[in-house]
Length: 237
Image (cartoon, rainbow, N blue to C red; front, top):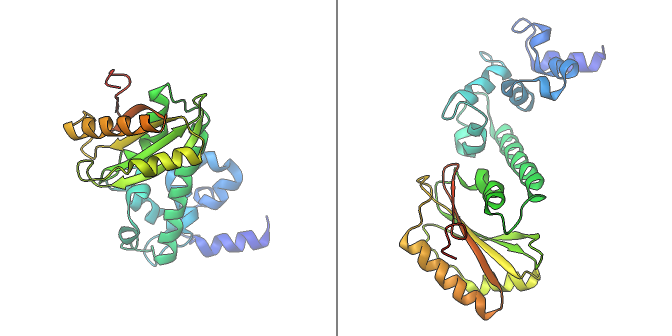
């Protein structure tokens, strides 16, 4: 066994607390990343424990609240993380960076299958990003003439009734991306994706404005709690 690695593992985990087979670093070497539990993986990022808790203990504590799984890491704010015993500023930043990276990797994989004329693929692409948000967020997704995804743009935050959807800004981005079709998306923090009168009014206004630029508003998708509502599928657009 590599002396330096063994010594490093000894610094991270108190040997009297866990048998070698249960130390995340050594389990990684023998089983690979897929063989580790969520707590093991978090413990590797956390690295060190406290006088009374191992890194695994701290990881298990983080996973036990709210959802009882890794969603806790994504939803916990920086300020909440530093309140956890054993999590300081640097560790909190590292953990939030890991959570953000995992979300971006997942989105990058899903982006290859997203299609404008298949609302379920668009909803799936944005679901995890938007379903847990505590405020309404409005996003516009852009597509070329062959319905290929060109990227998106953040439009506004806050309830859709009070948010100003700047049509000229939406269209300017469409022209910059050489997009011919757009899809509007926003979330309902309540989890109920039923459209409101304001949702319909904003959709009508954007559809009217987009026609001026010869750009088609193909859908407005509302993201709820693991469900979505498509104006296109419901023949409102």
